[in-house]
Amino acid sequence: MTEERNTAAPETEESRNFILNLIDQDIAEGGQFQGQTVHTRFPPEPNGYLHIGHCKALCIDFGTAEKFGGLCNLRMDDTNPAKEDTEYVDAIQQDIHWLGFDWGDRFFYGSDYFEKDYEYAVELIKKGLAYVCELTPEEFKANRGDIGIPATSPYRDRPIEENLRLFEKMKNGEVEEGKMTLRAKIDLASGNLNLRDPIIYRIRFINHHRQGTKWCIYPMYDFAHPIQDALEGITHSLCSLEFESHRPLYDWVVSNVSIPYYKPRQIEFARLGIDHTVMSKRKLRQLVEEKLVSGWDDPRMPTLCGLRRRGYTPKSKPGTHCSACSLKELCLPVLYQRADPKAYLRAHLDEMQEAAP
Image (cartoon, rainbow, N blue to C red; front, side, top):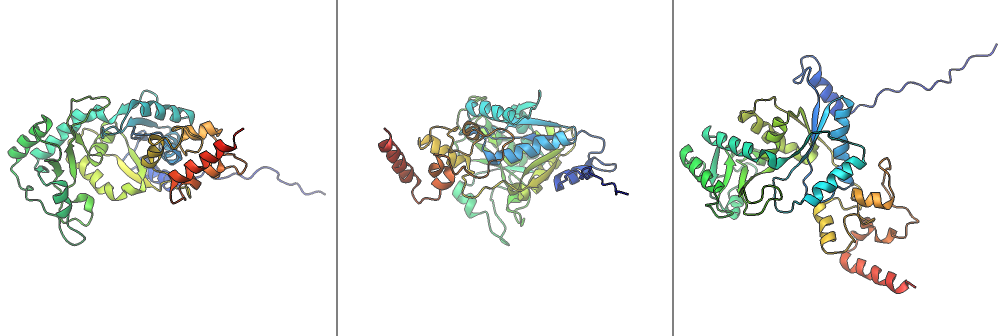
């Protein structure tokens, strides 16, 4: 008698991670979002092209929403007008679609909420929870204190009416850039430096890519971001680990302004790191601006458009460079190990030109 063998593949449990487990608890009976649709967002800053590091974040944001049959918004974080451009807005959308994700009709700009941000700032002033500070950047650093040493500001106890008047002057362009800021009034002795009366508005006389010159005061990310999440009905604000110490400020903002929706929950995850690979938009932008590469889609760049041009598909897992690639010696992981990247790259380009028939 022959023994029957079960050749069926064993059932595997669904892969779970701590983010999914926390959301499970939130939407379960008795959870803070019981019976609600899971709603996330991906908020890139349009000051450069997406790179492989952003890929992890957007896959978590869009993928988590899909996992729970929820929604994910795409919001351009354009609260800093200095280096933002519509070119980057278009490129970001193209890269996300290339990866197979879609935001439906939920495409927003952070600047869409400038009026609301301003209204909530005024509300904080009226509640005695914000004040106009005239410390210069140098004085601000000198008075920030240290561990066990409280920060100080001689303007903290200004009357509410005076703060409202000065903030209005800031808004109307009657104050020079750098002369005044609006600070949240939280705790100058907090062990978390992010809670030591952080700046929530600053003056910038610069043209905004969508708003033009309508505004000369701009909200700081830590103030605008939680407000925007709450206004969009976001349930879970998923972000990278460097914002863990900012979470108390995130919670403080949504708890102290009269947003008519529930408070989002911030959950942090580790950033993606690849050895010997540049994962800084600022440095990648420098390479493009100094023409050390042919553009953001140069095959040596770790940008999504660069990987796409190199031949990767959306389902590829780029982690190492092909040993047979003719560009291997010029790839950024190698390039940035050199003491003088510019000289190294130029030397190799010269060698390639001399060797060309």
